Image (tube, rainbow, N blue to C red):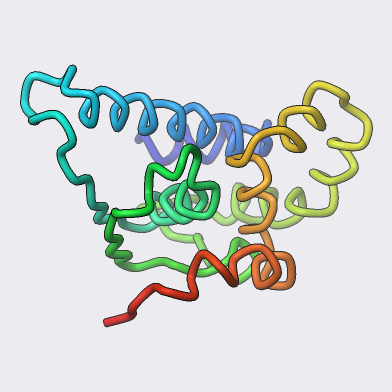
Length: 160
């Protein structure tokens, strides 16, 4: 039932993919800050944070990894499961993920319509032009910008 609601919401407003992901990215960064500063009850100050991500969570993790705000991910390790591609190479149709209508809407919205919306909306453009997470999200939409943006980031990564 959750996936039905998600599909309906993304079909109606495909920009939610970014904005909900942006909120999740902020939540992850806030949690990391609490952990590394010693303000989280379960972790010692300076604890190392590694990531295991699955499906669309990998897209979020890669976006954060590329953005690397305040170099928070310099010492982190990442494990990606059932994902890892740029948005335009994903195929997210599944009764467990998105229905075909939502997927078709997202594929038609990103990146073309999305880029036009950015040109017409100053607050969105400011967010994407001044935010490392916004810039990384845009890079993750297609392989061509991703290759330019990510060369340094993935240069030292290891695959298993």
